[in-house]
Length: 185
Image 1: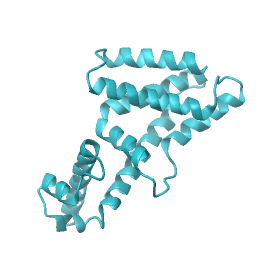
Image 2: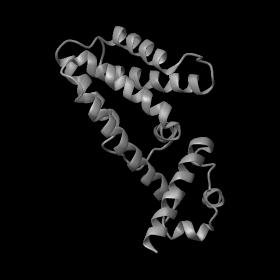
Image 3: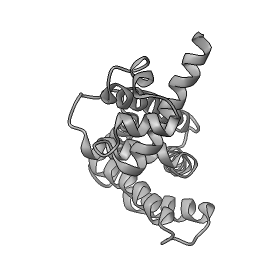
Image 4: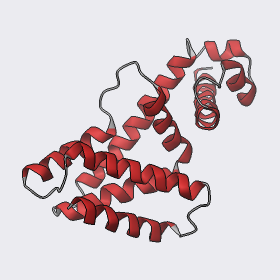
């Protein structure tokens, strides 16, 4: 029975992620999630106490996944320029390979005021950028550099998703990485 519950819980999370990333948090109801999974609303409440708990579990999972990816990029080289490239490429790869997770994280940051979230993936990047600034290698404030990196990846993701960008992913990665390196270093 425990295995079935785990499977159902996973289906609830997958459905919620899909619906939240398409419709938003407010517009997605427990009823919508239950219908998408093919279960009753009551079945959802056997796994989660509220929609907010589902959101929090997704946020925790996605944040952990992104921290791992960024940590890997940060330890990928001894050369700071290569590390920056790897961070940008990792973010682009994540956005294109897990669009619902990427959209969810962006929606969460744009629309959610509480609860306070700690250990966000951007904190790792900011630490790296603060180090570059301390060494005199960063042309702007670390927070502005972080905004430029994450904002650029987000915008490129949206443009690609809406078919405004017709280029292949390797070309996009190369061009965005080069543009950000020129602007930041």
